[in-house]
Amino acid sequence: MVDGVSFEAEPGETVALVGPTGAGKSTLLKLLLRLYDVTEGEIRVDGHDIRDVTLESLRSSVGYVSQDTYLFDGTIAENIRYGRFAGVDHDVESEELRERVIEAAKAAEAHAFIDALPEGYDTRIGERGVKLSGGQRQRIAIARTVLQDPAILVLDEATSAVDTETEMLIQRSLDRLSEERTTFAIAHRLSTIRDADTILVMEDGAVVEHGTHEDLIDADGLYAKLWGVQAGEIEGLPEEFVEKARERHVDRGYGNDD
Image (cartoon, rainbow, N blue to C red; front, top):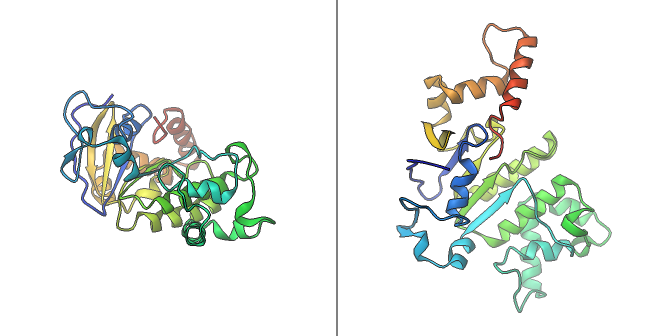
């Protein structure tokens, strides 16, 4: 549940949402996608209440990348092609679309590992992509979103389930994907959103702080405390106390999914 949340995002801006479990971060993004409808107030895109447009029109304009990657038992090319809204077109086998799929994979840092597979883009990946690693599945999902070419991008803990090296590849592809798009990002690792135009810090369904990374650090509130725990920058405490603080941070669910 969220209450009294009000903010604007300009075209091309990145808005990050952080805070403890249950704060309302994922709920806000589900409201944007109309998985729920607001009971009071409204959400507007380009000045239009999203309840006044069709679900197809709304969702074709929003690209969603989550930590849980949804792939299907087919080829890599077929899974990327689902980025074309509804997933099917009369020209799905055309050479032009094939080239677009490859370009999307390159933008998602996925082309190199796909090209190295014996059957390349025609490799069957099994149910939910079981034949691929977590990082490979995530990059295919990002390629699918690149092909969709949405005006709005929603990133829901998109790098939280991979190792550090893979995270760097995925983050680089996400940075490229975010260019010239309005982006909403839920972040566990605060370092991934420190360059966001606006950071909304949520707690108990409300926005308790907002501003840039520098603004929030200077404010020395909840965000600064979360940043200090993740960065190990707890002034005056020895390392063993820092480790305990990190454990408490995880136990309380700070920064995790709703």
